Image (cartoon, rainbow, N blue to C red; front, top):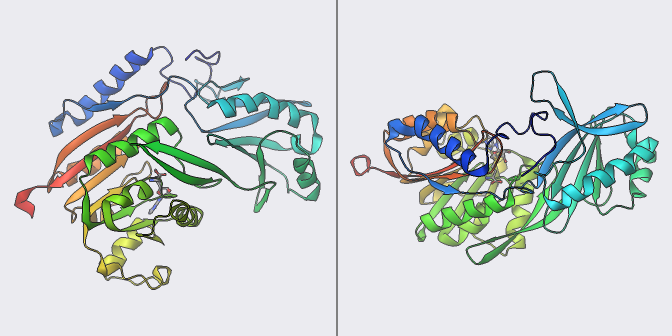
Length: 371
Ligand SMILES: C[S@@+](CC[C@H](N)C(=O)[O-])C[C@H]1O[C@@H](n2cnc3c(N)ncnc32)[C@H](O)[C@@H]1O
């Protein structure tokens, strides 16, 4: 990827290395971090080299009536004004200058705008405009008149106005199957579609059909992994803290005709309490969570990794599938999990080229001495 913002924009920090050098840099880093676990080789999954992000956020910089996109600069407290970002997928990349020019000419849309968040799918693009002003019917009319091919949402403190819907329709192709998802504004979705497809394929390939067994998923988001994995299990219980995500997950399961998943809006800590009979939750409705025969736990926590209670809890599962976006918290958690489990597979997914970030997938199996 060639980007005119390299060396100015703080988003890409490995811009001086070509893709093969970045790969080596990341593998060396992971070898150092996980060497003490006896891991020398990782499975590696590459990203597209440009136009790989289907989610991106930019600040808006005002200079009189002119506006520009901006990012935090490479150096502390600096700012980089940017005209384009070749990390964004083709739909966002194409829309960015058109949307900026459109907003610049329209005072109602322009005034007090401080940021734009983009979300795209194969066929649709959504842009959330963030304001330091209360949005009203004038803003709504101005947004409704927008002639660009984009779903516009306006957000200001306690106000959200959606002009033509607040999700994009997406599909993912993995292992010969196509899965359908509605990706909602305001809920998590994986930023790199191609790498996401590879993560799903990797999990499916590594988990042998456990048709008579049940899966527990914590941090399930909108059902990104839940839906493809459901075909391998008899029943699935999937939980997540965000209301928007759990509602989207239910919708997505229905979209794919998947019927063996129960979704519950519970944090990982709450679910641990519920299964440990420490507390009951109305949010579980009539679900019989004790009727499951769990053999596998799938966890994809935020950067903070597992809390102490959830870490101890997942040790009770024969198989743990751990997807992590933060090697440091993964290392901390694995130190504990390897007391009872052995690492069967360790893969690196390059979700974030040109940065130091790397996504990992680890599959752990309980050691026979702990059965
Ligand atoms: C890295 S995302 C993974 C989502 C999903 N697996 C996917 O691939 O789209 C982490 C998810 O955990 C949720 N989350 C954050 N803290 C949580 C908690 N304490 N308990 C349960 N879910 C939580 C977030 O809302 C987010 O959807």
